[in-house]
Each structure stands twice: as structure tokens, then as C-alpha cells.
Length: 150
Image (cartoon, rainbow, N blue to C red; front, side, top):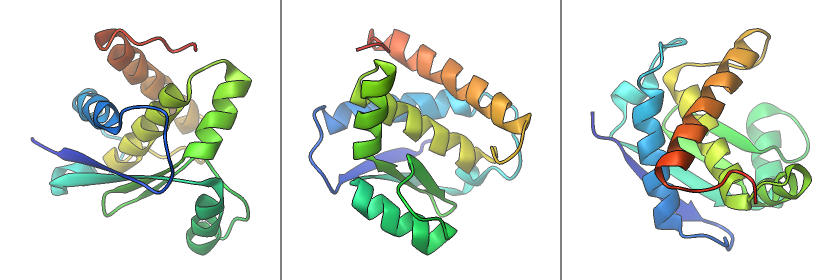
């Protein structure tokens, strides 16, 4: 299955967007190796759109589509769109000692797992999804010789 990852920027980023697209395409292949957690929407998509936005834009989307005030890290829409908050990626990266790029990549992988059918609203499904996304992140980071820690 060939699925293209298309990145759009609503804000400036400090990394190569083409690299993020390539890393998410590699991650997609790894995600597809995992047992499905539900309806696999990825089978129906020819492309996945990843939008990188500000916390302000993310807060608007979070309220509009989920009824929750304030920004969040990532929102996944089942028509194949993943929206990532660049501001949150930067902030969490600072707190965790990781790069903004690695946080953004992690959020993208998280969105891919949602498109594959995984949910994380309740335990133990949340722990399982997070374990799997960390494994995929580690594999992609090793193949690109990128460091998770900044």
C-alpha cells in the first residue's frame, strides 16, 4: 500500500518539512505492521494530510470539534488529516529534554495509530497505544540516526 504524507505549515518550523514527511511515511509502514485496534482507515486513504499549526489554531479546533477548551498536542480526523500543535511540541520538548522535531514526529505517529484504529481514551488501551508509538518512534529515529534527546 502506497500512502503519501503531505505536510502543510501554518507556522514556521525549525526543521525540514520534507524530512518529517519522509519519516512519517516510514513510520506508516511500521504502524501497518501492528495488529489493528479497530477500523483501519489507512486502507481507504491515498494520502494523509499533516497540518502544523499554532496553539491558538489548535485551541480553536479543539473547541470546535471536541468541545474542549485550550490547545492539545494532536487531533486526528478520520478523513486522513492529522493536526499538530508546533507550540505544544516546542513546549513539551523543552520540558522533556527532547527536540521539537522529535515531539512533532511522535505526535504524527500518534495520529497514524488513530487512523489505524487505535484509541487511547481508557486504560489499558492508552498504555498499549503509547507503547507501540514509542517503539515506532525509536525505529524511525534509529534508521535516520536522529537522537530523541535534544
